[in-house]
Image (cartoon, rainbow, N blue to C red; front, top):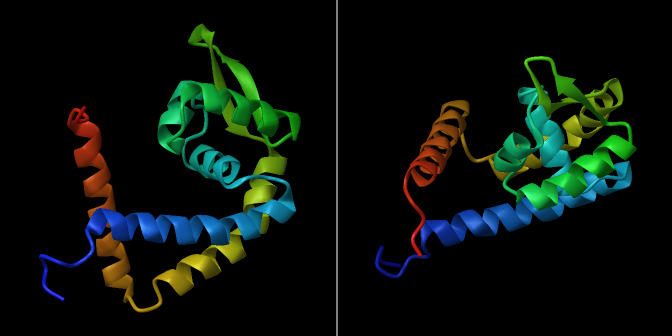
Length: 147
């Protein structure tokens, strides 16, 4: 197949995303959470103390959708919302011990999915792929969307 007729990289990335999402759903659903909720928890693991708006941006959902996600995670005891002492109008969100435990319970299965998806790559190639994907995300975030 020539490069001219090869599937677009964007299409291939979307195919991988859909396949991963299906596998992740099978892993996290028995724990009573959705893939989007799991994503929010992993973001909070890396960046505790975010606002709901920041979390929405990092989890790739709208601010309105994040409000429902935050409510569900809070009701499940997986996150805490507290007033930011520097800005009393701002609420910050962090994992609770139960949220940390939830991520721990999912970790081996998620590691297995990632290992299966990228089994054909060396550790260096996986690291390079990660850098390329981050570069692509940053490039899209820094340019205005096309209407």
